[in-house]
Amino acid sequence: MNSPETIAAISSAVGAAGRMIVRISGAQAHHIARDLTEIHTIEPGMALSCNLWPGVRCWAYGFSAPRSYTGEDLVEFHIPGNPVLARMILDEVVRSGARQAEAGEFTARAYFNGRMDLTQAEGVAATIAAQSEREARAARQLLAGELARRLSPVTDSVAQALALVEVGIDFTDEDITFISADQVRQRCDQALNDLRALIHDSPRFERLAHEPRIVLVGRPNAGKSTLLNALAGTHRAVVSDVAGTTRDAIWAEVRLKRGTVRIVDVAGLEDTADGEIPRQMREQALRELHAADLVVVVQDVTAGAKPLDMPRLPDLVVKSKVDLQKDVDGVSAITGEGMDDLRARLDELAFGPDGGGAGLALNARHVRAIEQATDALGRVTSAIDAGSEVVALELREALDALGGIVGAVSPDDLLGRIFSEFCIGK
Image (cartoon, rainbow, N blue to C red; front, top):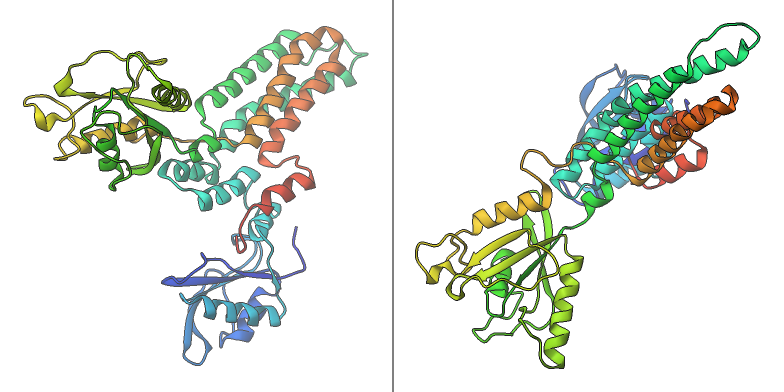
């Protein structure tokens, strides 16, 4: 694809910044850049300081097809970070013959021009949208082509099996065997194992974007509310020496090292809940326990460690109020003792071991396509006795599903949905 239209957009974030970028891509990109500046020629990889208007200097970066982000002639104006100035320059570029780019159009052109596969294009969008270290790391893996690399051996094996089966169909009148039934089974079994391992080992982008929910549970007056306030850095929950102050679920967003979690403080759990209000308080606490990603039991060191009647095992037990008792490991929300260690432990529970985390992640489209491929491969074994034509049909369905992940076979409506989610200028 080499579109006859030249497109332009502001390719930096909305709002004031140290620098902003106006990007132009297409056959007229270099011509427009020369008209707007005193630049007489633009060489590939050239970076020149130039005047756009009197008193307005910028850096112009030139790229020539196919060695550019979009695979087309491309120019970027890097200007002082004033949104009004960027808008004025874009208007001039449009008046000079370019068209305002649509959402995701730069990356779409990069895909259609073979500069990246579809998973890498999705990696661009995921990088922009990342809200945590884990999301950013997973997005970088997509952008680097890691998913395509992982799928390549499986795709090649299935494609080779399909080719040999189809050649065998063409030579049915000849006494020649290009691939045996056992070899087809072996290839399918190996492909299934690889795809299932990929699904098992790769978290979902949707889960990475999910804010882990951590519930603090304990007996009344165990120090849960004080601990919540200390973690949140604000007085989110009412604190009192009177047991039973917390009656409803109170939450706060807490920023940890690698992301944000939602910590919920619930009413203290009593052994018995006599009366309508205590009963409702306990039911609310139990609902939060069932919905939680992680459960942290808070134990008051001055009150012993009598076990709680809970519907699930805790992920962490925290001894609180250690400022009131010597030689006990735990935390004090009053003095801050042990709070750094608690934050580190919560970060590890919520986001995995430090240094690990999300590597490659899959989105819903990837998972759906892999499941379609595994379903088709699983049907191959039972189809072998039905004849080579049926085997070839199932192998073709598996190959089409895998090819659709990287964009080898993607209908226009799918591509439209993917690129429409991008922001303007990307």
